[in-house]
Image 1 (cartoon, rainbow, N blue to C red):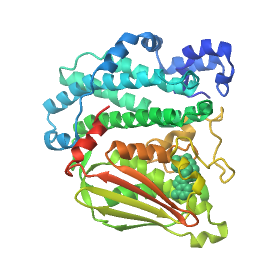
Image 2 (image 1 turned 180 degrees about the horizontal axis):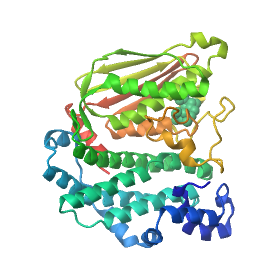
Image 3 (image 1 turned 120 degrees about the vertical axis):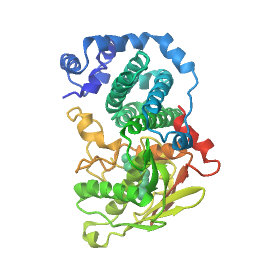
Length: 429
Ligand code: ADP
Ligand code: MG
């Protein structure tokens, strides 16, 4: 069964499949795709999407505009009143800002090497952005509360529609990147696309949360975030995924400044922490035989919080990363998951819908009891590092070959001196 999001490709695939069948492998017939598409997207909307594909001037004009930044500190100190006027202003800001950011992403898709840009999955994501641009750019001016309500509804729909984008890019690039040997080109595109997506999602969720008026939050900023709770949430998620996959899970021990509480945004942590923990758990389990199940060495998570930043170190005793692979571990699509060590599902089999198999990787902390895959895309580390740097921090991997691995995640406090300048980037395009 072809997922609805892939089916939007159809119109662009058709001419291409005339030349090469390769790009169509793993997908059902055109007829089936077409029907699937018709059920989710009205003909008119499809026509508009296609028109937008060629509507260069609108995208180009928007892409040239400067993105208007909004810093977390500004939000924290000025966004406290959740009255109607604030929410209306917030929607008006988004209405100006979103098409610009989305247009810049579309330009980046256009700049991809032909062989990559034509990959059906990547093309599908490209079209998702075009569709979003179209919807956002054509939305009538927001003047009343009712306008704001319908704009916000559109925004939540778009968030939902773009939920699987990271997974789609991961599988798309896995399919076609062997044709390009320029790692830097891939890294630049993915760093930018993924971090910009994070920034957009933070902005949108910030606006949507402002309307909810949750206690202790200013939009998406948790004004007294207890770091321990965020980490524990990720530990529980990863333990669930791992016990489903392996039937055994090492202990996850937390120490250091376990009472640290400060204002921060949970969204990036909810992606980064599970990815690092999954790697640590996998290495621990796979480097110890099943007889050693009682003696799996624990994974130590240490937190430190100071005036400037907070640091999370995750140490495992999973044997480390071999010398010749330490640099590559941070490359997109580099994984040791397919070398026989695991029984993870194949990359992108035609029979499994992407929604079903990969969906949980994106917003990793998922209420779903049986979580997403442990590994397999080679996206966990590079994406986490890109997110950390985008937030004005860093992610470092230190392997002690023969023993284990330490991963250091450092993030600046929102109110630390000088942090504002760096963290500003999380609200820039
Ligand atoms: P994936 O988990 O999908 O393979 P990642 O980007 O998360 O992708 O990790 C890339 C590779 O780096 C892994 O396949 C593994 O070989 C190596 N790696 C990452 N973390 C660890 C770790 N803690 N111990 C040993 N190897 C690791
Ligand atoms: Mg991983």
